[in-house]
Image 1 (cartoon, rainbow, N blue to C red):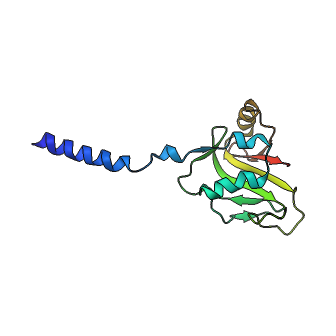
Image 2 (image 1 turned 90 degrees about the vertical axis):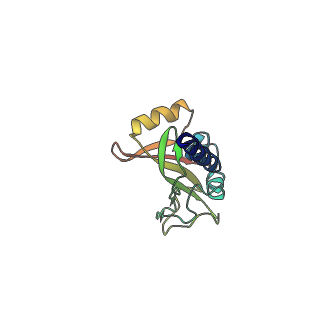
Image 3 (image 1 turned 180 degrees about the vertical axis):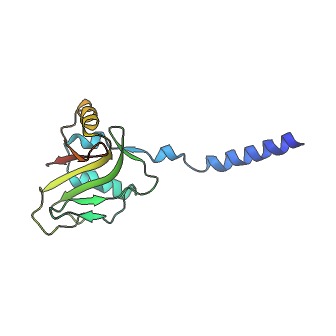
Length: 149
């Protein structure tokens, strides 16, 4: 009798779990978008639509670069590194707030990842990205940044 009760519980838990998508189904790799052949709107809009990032920027720099926080459980990655922030600005685009200073560019976008700049840059170049790689916090945070179109 114990075996059948255990089997019933296992079957029920399996059925319940099947109704929930696995955590990895929320993973979203940004590698191809960080090839710097796009613009900030095309990069940010799908992330907002699919609710990978909070629609309200956590910070707007004086140069108008908006920093968006990934939503909990979104599991965004860039070149295999976990994303801690998404960056973007496109002039005259309602998705972005304007800073108090001169905008950095008409359109710029990217991500801040957890990892050392040398490692991030090596993998970015393997993927063919021409993004600017900049260490934000030594051995901890690195920005991957595209400006253009």
